[in-house]
Amino acid sequence: MSIGCHAEIYEGAEEFDDRPPRRGLILCRNDDTSGGIEAVAGKLSRLGIWLPIIGTAYEPDPGAVVRAMKQGALGFLGLPLRRAQLRETLETVWEEALRSGAEHQRTVDAKLRLSTLTGREREVLDLLAEGSSNKGIARELGISPRTVEIHRANMMQKLGASHAADAVRCRIEAMMAGPGMPGPRISAA
Image 1 (cartoon, rainbow, N blue to C red):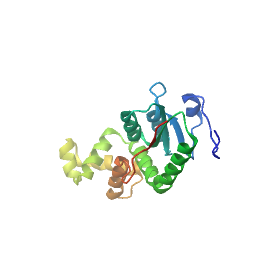
Image 2 (cartoon, rainbow, N blue to C red; image 1 turned 60 degrees about the horizontal axis):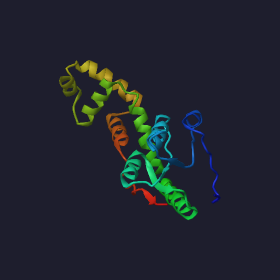
Image 3 (spheres, helix red, strand yellow; image 1 turned 180 degrees about the horizontal axis):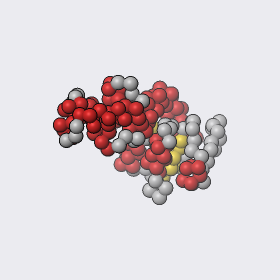
Image 4 (spheres, one colour; image 1 turned 45 degrees about the vertical axis):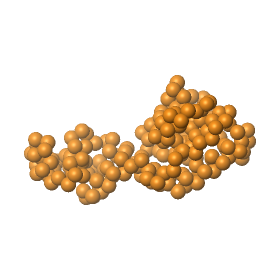
């Protein structure tokens, strides 16, 4: 089927792992044997990449479509693909990606930075986000204020934060699912 788009086809998960895409959008068959959308979105996230994903499946059920959306799909198509539905979904998803791609990338970047924190550094950040002082954090965690200062300094450095508000902002961005994101674009075969 030709609709005027360039496509890179991957033989399987190993090839995708060896050379993941860095731009464009992904059309991903959502099945349990390969891990589907969850595996693809997870791999990209670990690499600090966000790309729009369109899921596909034979006879997609509503539950599978909802799970795909929660895992990162911006659209969903039934198989076999029909030219008009594919073109329309590609255009819609691409427009959405252009509008919200930077926000999605900030979320991925923030999650990647937070993943570098130790458990204790994450606890310090969580309590800092609740408005606790260093002394309050020390009491809550049963450690000295000086130890809190060390964990806080390490956490700030790893997050690239120059002050506490930057660190808390990073935490919030990592937790965001993308406010204002529309529901998935769904087309049945």
